[in-house]
Image 1 (cartoon, rainbow, N blue to C red):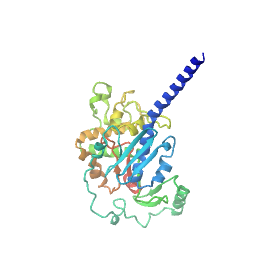
Image 2: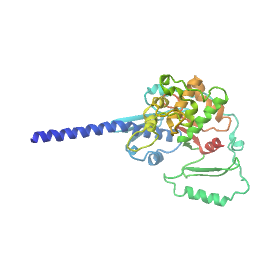
Image 3: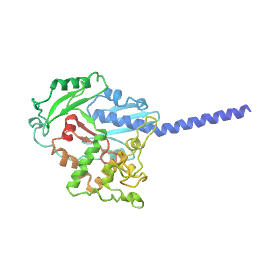
Image 4: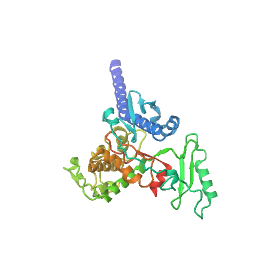
Length: 353
């Protein structure tokens, strides 16, 4: 009887251990992936300190339990959690890339094309075309109220909490600008979903150039035998493709959004693999996956990696005075159009105009 009870206890204990190990294996890559990617980009792209990233950006359960090492010479970050680890590497012109599904050598070989910046000195050209900020402001602005507002917004935000920076634009002019004490106009800030607007602008330029028709089905090979074959670029842009994609975020489980961003080298491919649960153009559902499918698609339309990676700089950023943008790709070489773009505050304001 005692042996039977002991065996039962051991069996339950073993089952618990196995369940814990399976859960840790399931979530660990999300922990290490988030830590490695955000720490690498924060230090090597945004120009922030390791301390600020670890105290603000990755200081939440369970990511805070990662153990991170930075190789400043090679510009790499490795993050570990128990037996698991992830690595993010810096690629000149393209920022930091999580090494997932593709060999590290292949990831490092993604080459940003040589698209020179305009030769003019931006400090001699008035903003928004350049960086010369006017020392006068348009009439009708109560600067005391504006400064009081900025004082409230930036109050008690350092060390390491709260708002990073604020810029107020009125009549095509920066009329007020304020940065946290450890930030400057030179710092790049992570876009998160503002990157989606950059993707939409990229596609708009391709439409203007006659390279894509947003109302045609995408005709992806893997979609040819089911109803996904009817999905258009317009559906992806309006996020009514009908694809099953869970955009929610959780601290205890990986959703489609976090799985895509943290575990897959081809993010658009992962999103495109999802099943159709609604007829296209019938149900709206916010989806970072849709934007990354769109990026994969326009990469295939352009065909040439160098042309694809250089197009935003050549056809958009250089033409409107944006110099700071670093748009990071996934390990397959497609821009993470949903989430991973870095720019200065002034360049975000410029893009907004």
